[in-house]
Length: 301
Image (cartoon, rainbow, N blue to C red; front, side, top):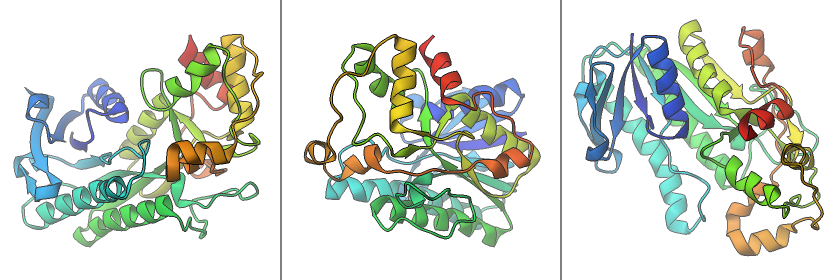
């Protein structure tokens, strides 16, 4: 089997590529950077530029599955210009893939795309399943809604669509976790706000395995890509502090202070989404790290 991956050189992409090669799955990948091109038999790079609607269509040769991970990070100050980039990086890339498949013979039968739990509204009470109809009315909710709509268009080509709504990804060498853990390790950690906001998280190893599971099982539809046990910000922080053998002694970080410091992006720290992963579990997927202590212990060893 051969897959095509967008965002293959990113944090999640690298882990998925590693698992693909373990399973003897060959990988084509798209990049905007000529320096990142490789031509190995099982790992071939191709150039594209979604902003200019340019793509090397040889990337689709013998490809059965597209794994779509590309998108500008949301962990950067949301200026008006950058908010446009966050949205367009997702929509333009999906549209370019779709149009290229429409105009060329291909063997693609499934697309497995990243999405985000940011589609669900901020709530301390709700427990969100994939079937939940509530939608966040802010910037992130709008981005995810339009992102998923773009991916769902692949159905018009009789291509199966799988969407993984990803929570907070915990990884040792990238993403948010090292930045969250660092001040705690130095004894200057603190809860955000009242610390009661729900954080639906997933260990990067489980996330990559989930992508592979969806491919192997040919699972179709929307799946919440989060661990089975969401935790409060307070419990999450205390789990890191326990592993680091530190105490949380500083006062809570006020929401207003972070709004002044981070601007609109502060919602990433204070938004509360308790998300259910029962659907993927019932389909047969088993988590290695199903509780926060297991994940933190692994990442901080």
